[in-house]
Length: 432
Image (cartoon, rainbow, N blue to C red; front, side, top):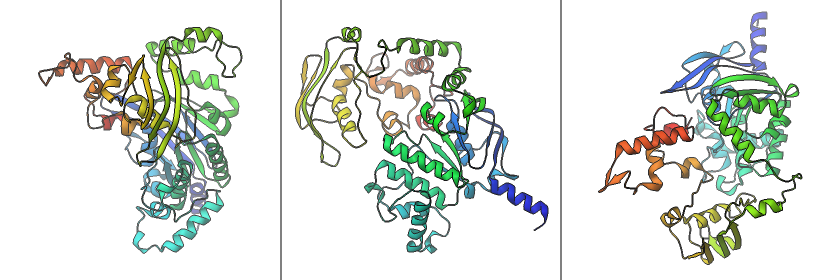
């Protein structure tokens, strides 16, 4: 090997990633606007930005799910498309695992020559990776038997098994308990000590300041700055995140910050007397509510609570402890097997979803992509789902299309929904 080949090999081994001038447009939207980005070996580089800033689009381009309209991507001196499959792995926020298959089967799924692999050797390789990076997973267990934190470890082992040296972690702690998050932080530190590089996407400023080496801030598809963690602070990062917003959006942010100022001086979670006086009449009253989960096992065992007008009631608990079942009961999606439900002084007996909608109850589900949006329908039609019998939109079983689309346009402006038109289908919109 001559000196130039040695130099090239060393450059590739360092896995320096460089994106230059990456631009990606969808009809009516510029998702990424001449984005420049670099990632060094052994670095945790955080990408920070509000929803719609272009983070997911950029990562999808990097991973190969989208093709950039223009720009270049290199690892070392080699163009990225030549080495992507071997060098880059992505752990999605919503795990890509087959629940009724084993850990080992999920890890080798899609590999070339998989029929020739010996499962016993695969199990041994998985155990070696697990021990090396403190990522213990049992290769013989089925995914449906694992906790959320364990499933995430399977996703990380999967990309390491395939030889990835660059890992993209998309909101990795969104579904984890604090203890699982702490374990993930230690795993990330272990990986970078082994010369892996991590692109970390998160909204949690505490994580940004604790884990990052460098931080790139995106806003409306543009790079606002790339900063070293030690040379910035949360306030500067927050200012950069909103620096490219339009005036009307800045007003909304200012109003939000003003309205959410805490009255009390101590941040101990206590409610001041002034706040208590703001609460109105009793709105929701649950007494001794019992309910079962989708498998028929008890999920709620004697839940009692009150919610008053103007009150925010927070509920904390590890995933799998009845939170989805409780929200289902409150919204009419699930009938309690025992107990009393009262809403605005009206006793309810197995209320339906439509009845709860008529009473003014709204429900934003935990998994918005599966349960919050009808992906095969347009944005305008999605807005209509709760109100499709309104005579403004329907007459004699015929839809008034012009009214529906006008309503969709107004709602898109009101809620800053960035899509080409109100006729854009849900599945194309939610993937951005």
